[in-house]
Length: 153
Image (cartoon, rainbow, N blue to C red; front, top):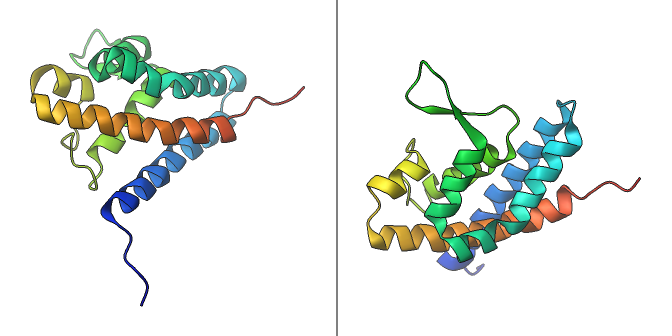
């Protein structure tokens, strides 16, 4: 009989799985772009500093910064839309995807992370979201470092 992995170990594996999927998504999207180096490098740079950014500035501040850099308002819409090929928007989407995952259930599905933090999050949920964001972003940083490495010239 094989031993069952602990809940913590399972959660760690799930973080790794989703982070890997996110990085592979960036790799696939990057293949279609003309300005490959800019998007790839920008995402890699953001992912490399993301855990420290959340730790130093807080989840809300960091998410709001990514949103400000990665989204724009359409004059006909109340909701901001991601700028095309924006690494900031993509990283914010990846983090929101993780916090909405069944295994963590912190951010309600379909909710905007910045709006949730600003209007609905209770202190305990915000602390859990921050801790979970850092744990996920550490995996994302590891995979970005490995898979989005700068190509030697």
